[in-house]
Length: 245
Image 1: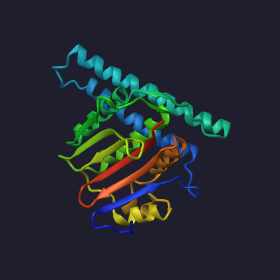
Image 2: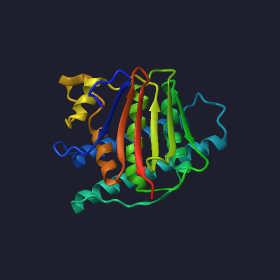
Image 3: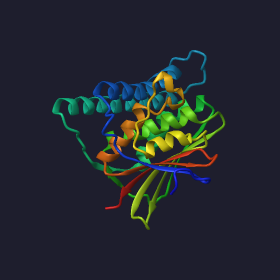
Image 4: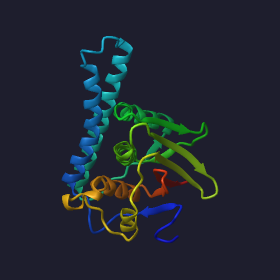
């Protein structure tokens, strides 16, 4: 495929060896993603103007805060363990993505709603069990959803999808949004293997720094292929392809 395509662009991303994510920057970035969830739901719980909150609703919000805190703890433990041992840890287990995906939607539902966005999960009934590392996968999807919410204008849609591609023997997870897409210069830079900066003198790249490197690093650890598809004027599709066992 040529570097510029009238139908849009696609880039397969691999780990950047020249611009690794430091422990401090990764930890700070991932803590922020989890804290945004915790802050959002605790704000709802303490809002004195909401008089119609049921005990059931309060318990549901409390459960979301609890789950986000547990997820944050696991992320912190993993990052610090890797730093102390000087190598990356991958702990794969069976994941029911119907439950896993539903938790992600719950985590980001309030943030999406505040931005006037629709966030949904679409999985087939026969979507198989995914054998992978839940901590690394959570980091990937948290960053993809955060960026999708950040760059999708009010009234837009974000959909987490899961499907099986029998032809390519792959299990595919996608985060698709109806936002502004990714500019061609960023995609071309990524395709050439260049790092993307968030420095103040290149504001057009702002938002594609640490999070993108975390995604590509984690995808490599999980032995899955990460692609960004940008159909012309149709938002962005972030795609993870896991080989079927």
